[in-house]
Image (cartoon, rainbow, N blue to C red; front, top):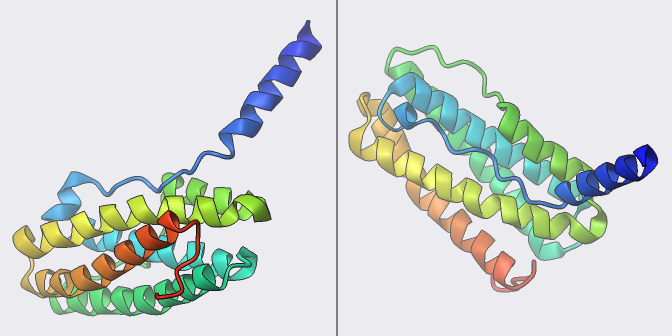
Length: 179
């Protein structure tokens, strides 16, 4: 009986690892307050960079790899712009860091099988970019520091481009030759 229970638990744990774990959305205060915004934007960018570095290593799909490289390039620039704006606003931004939820998403990508990787990666990218878009749009319209509002506003079209590309790739099962 105990052995059967252990097998059942092991099997149920195995199915849980196939679920796509998007990183959690930023806290509500990040939409209007400078330091929570900087922290959330930094974590969002770091997640995109780290997850995309894994995609470059694991994905065999040229379109997914091209998308991942674009994310690394763009999110490196948006991080630099956010840090510059925070400094201009008189803040000392901490280095970007991942929270437990984003770390779990990264771990899921690291352990994903080759067959499941692109599906899981894209299933994380869509909600991650939806959350980032909401964060930047909200801060751009109601944030408490002008330099960060400007930076957030500049990030919006970049995040919209990424979201559209991720949705296209996801709809096509990872391939989009028009990207």
